Image 1 (tube, rainbow, N blue to C red):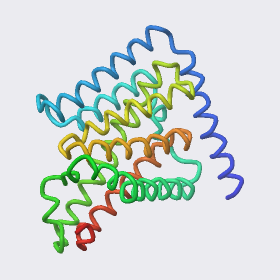
Image 2: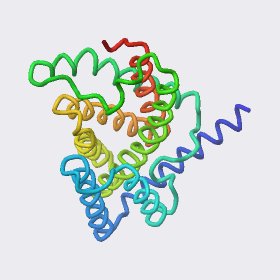
Image 3: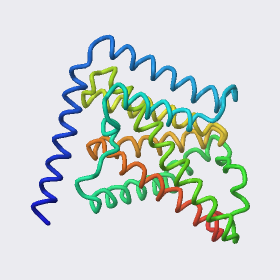
Length: 242
């Protein structure tokens, strides 16, 4: 068992290193194409959330991302959708990222933004969760499919990868991508108002940092996002937020 796990871990790390090497070998044409994809993705995010000119960006980004990464990179492992070397480590990493995001929101971001703007606007229908089991379960299904999987594939898996492409997928390029995509993620929650945009932007920073620090293990982000939103639904169900 231990030998097999070690071999799997080394294989996964080698795969990540190979992806890194391929990124460093991106041609100028490939980088420009990635920049065009990043600009298109940004326009889709802003076009829906700010101007309401196009349908919801998440399904569009998921489809574009899965097709783009498959065709251009050869496999979805390039965005981090690979079997983790250790699920236990992946879950613990995700729990740590989720706890950090929740604590930052409650203890730092919310008190800070309260000095400048009204509280963040909750998603439509969230006020119906309190005390209603079926409504809460329906919300859990939505946040795990749409937010945890959808937003993480679209934002961290796709847009962050393309942002890093522009800089040759160097470490600096990935961290720059974290910042860029965090801003987009904030605007992806424009309906929440200024406080919500800042709060979601910080959430994007935490999730993006978890993505990079976990050697681009997208499962860390998917699970962390799911844990964060599960906590939110649970808090709403029991009325803790009020």
